[in-house]
Length: 101
View 1: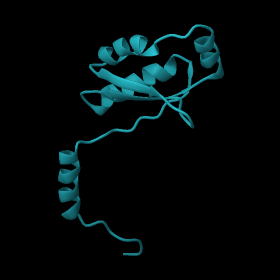
View 2: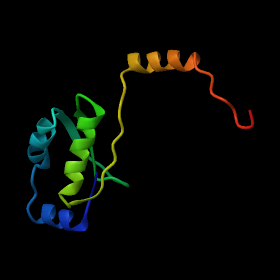
View 3: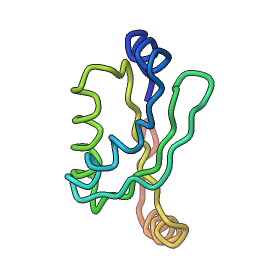
View 4: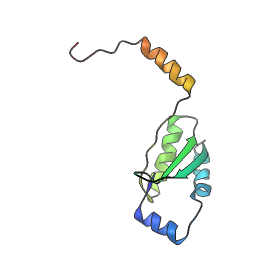
């Protein structure tokens, strides 16, 4: 996520462990907030949440974004290596038409 200028000003004035406040939000949608890191660049925080499904993960991201202190939220679903191998196997049996065919 990327914090708004107002959120950064608040954090600088009164540094707080935001993870302690975010964990219950993840749990409310059936998930588990695993870990978070401050980062430099386009996004200010990178966090890992385990959720039972994409709907729960989306609900978490929407709830976080709706609070108003974030200027951007980006979610990236992850798959296990085994799931990736299964997807590759399925892709190998699917014919995708090329442009002009």
